[in-house]
Image 1 (cartoon, one colour):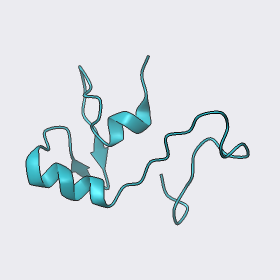
Image 2 (spheres, one colour):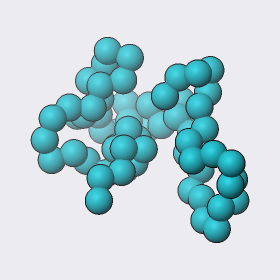
Image 3 (cartoon, rainbow, N blue to C red):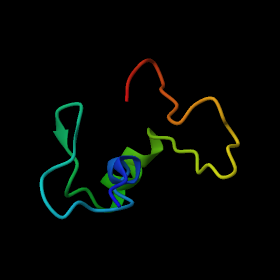
Length: 63
């Protein structure tokens, strides 16, 4: 199953296409570039509806 949030953080790699954030193609990021990207990205691994009113948290009205 495709999980866009895991793909944005490159926890799962796409098999086709590109992942572009803010005009930057991050598909090939590895090492320090990937760590820097992840420092500016947050994820909540939710189980048992810990936050039951939202499925995605948005910072500054951006995804």
